[in-house]
Length: 355
Ligand SMILES: [Mn+2]
Picture (cartoon, rainbow, N blue to C red):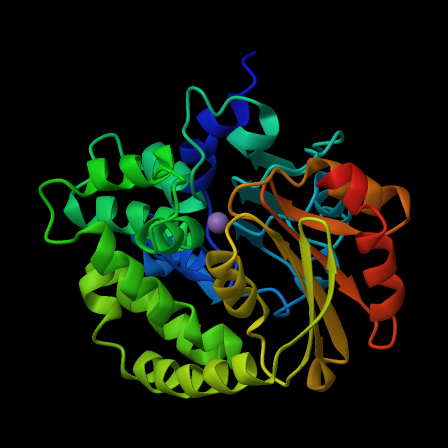
């Protein structure tokens, strides 16, 4: 059995049965992945579309249910899926590309994550939409190819922005790959980069209905159809104002070697936008943004670097008992409002070893 066996079995499993519930990450990669899944499966067999509780990365954020569950691009570790497998579903299928620890017990679970399973050589894992699209379609048409690229461009947006700002960092191979799949379609990486900001607007305002509308439109007409969904433009306009306001309220309150720490209290889920903007401004630093969202009674430590690997920092945080999710160059940890100073201390005191 190859490491990628679960991915090889994906189409067989998704072709079976009805009562499917699709849950995807709330960002542009998640939306594009859900659209691809819905397009391939057909609306008749899909009972519901949705997102886990926004901002939360745990099995509980999806919750109990019945029928079959397809989870896309969600990035939670395997242990959370083992818990989810006890939540009453008839079967769970996961397609992901985040570098996490895969589940060790796969009962009731089809876990296709080339990055976590270590088979991303044979199935490129630049985005969940890419993994899913390349498994579902032997010869993806232009609608499918653009959706596959949407996920890549959305996830690699900070690197695209840094490259545009003239950072010496070269364009990542993921973006070259996206440009390659887009050849012969009407879309370019630059156009998808703009679209990604639009698609990433609804979740910042916790507008789940608009995410559903996007998924359905994209399943029918791909990225062109995303542009014709009106709620997403309303959300985009609102978010642009909010981000400008939050950026102006931002305080850099600490510097430790290569790290820049910022604090923000603001009632919208714009953590990653702000963190990404800061990372693009300071490509040689590690950005640490401690964002408290009173309305969610949650805080997020968002750590990102354009040029630095965050593996050492991740281990330091884990050793200190902090739950961390993320990828090679982005980490996210949840905190309870009030705990931000303790977290900041743990992070800044590791700067010697990390920088
Ligand atoms: Mn993704």
